[in-house]
Image (tube, rainbow, N blue to C red; front, side, top):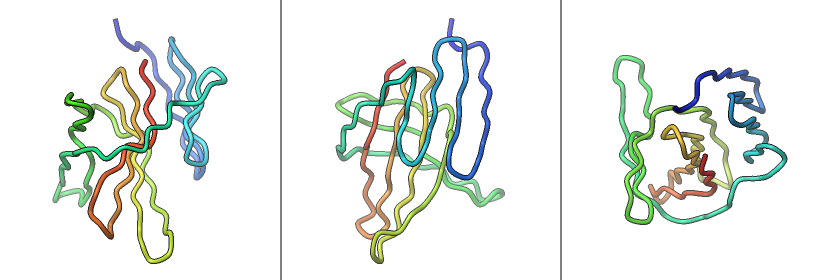
Length: 119
């Protein structure tokens, strides 16, 4: 039941997740697994964010999407980019079975779900 073995290999541009069920590669803002790409959604979502004052880190805790709440168990990758004067934070997260790519817009203070992949 569930994923037994998972290996994370980090680099500046990609993250590779290897488990007994699937092989996923996060590369240049896309998620690839077994030769396919995750479903692109681009929908607004509600996200509960936690801030750890000791580590000075913030991360998504719960994603509310299409009437369901997904409790985030792992943040796989976090990076930022600028488009004009707006800073965007991108989080690749999972609840254990579903992978999400969340984008936080610092100008409008809103969350977008850009990609989702059910496991």
